[in-house]
Image (tube, rainbow, N blue to C red; front, side, top):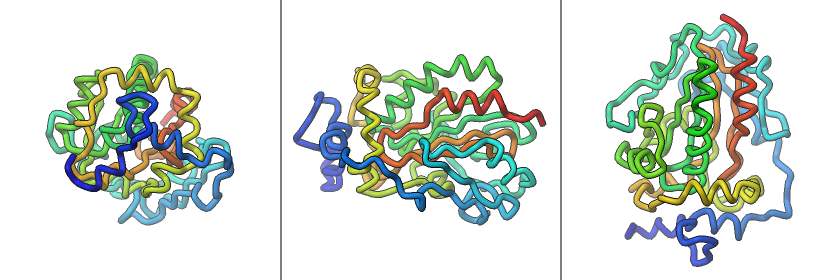
Length: 269
């Protein structure tokens, strides 16, 4: 990590030696503010060239309570989307093989939870991955496919998979952040280090500490511009988007109970 860009993920103020990045955001986040801009709570999915669904899907609207879209609104917006509208984004399995994003679940009626993590060297990414792993049996029992995508190359994904650990068959790498750009997820220094939504990490500090027990900075992408990428959570039934949520800041993860509820209430094809 000789690059000067590595300063984005290092800090002299540490809560724990392994919390180099999360410590910075916990100490410096403007916690006195709890309001969110409504302009940041909408993903427009009308452009098939840049987003997952084409002209048949008008918009996915988020509310001010954790920015969660209603299942019915999302389903209505994407109900008439066809397979040709789905963006052809190529990512990589943790084992290294290239795969199309749209091929990871049954496009006819399969339900999939697609969790876009931050980069593989982010402690909060390890915490979310740990929560997803612990919830996998519950999703499996409901017939829901769990897909986790992180920023970085497959070798970085394997570091997380081996050290957390995390099931390799559920983990994918997106070194060029194609899926993140496709879904218009937040990116930037302010979002990463100074967003008030990151205060939610305080309520999960024990889980974070447990998740990074075997953490290593070596999982950080070589292209350190990737550390400024935020994640999000999406639920699909076939080609329909049922749920969409953009993380407002580092550690602002979607509640998995809400995700599971959406999956269980998904309409039958």
